[in-house]
Image (tube, rainbow, N blue to C red; front, side, top):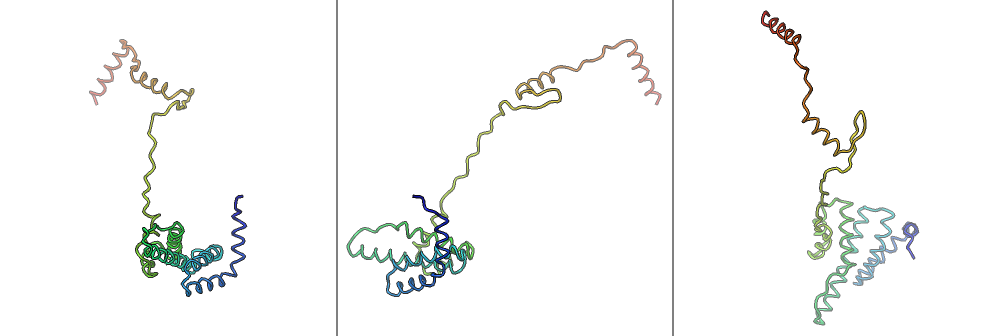
Length: 203
């Protein structure tokens, strides 16, 4: 069935008091060079810290520890494959997830610009650093802009009534082509014009 996210978060929140036990367990597994078990406990600690103190320095530390232990476990298996003369295997998805998770945790706590110096301080090899940056180098193409077409059946309101866009355009052309009506010149109008001209000449 579908997992209940809220119940899982509540369970992690209630188990937060046992985080110190998991931290000590991860340290002891590291001391005996059992990196797979240590990475498992580091992952459990990160899940608890997401509910208790996310984006904190403690959270970032254990996220880096999870990726470091996962890398050491992967390299141990690679050495075994070399002794068996087997071809090298790609990084597992769990290791890629741990590396990306560590980068995000450190970036949320200290800022993204400090990630590379911090990865160097952790002693990460270049392969693991590149794995943590895989999400950053994904090229995102800009969204295609829709083609601008002439509006169809767009309504334009006038004082008298509403007409369609095309009808209004034709009406405007017709109005531009029609000349303004002029009053016919009569004898009275010609005499009035002559009087105005004589007035301006006197001034």
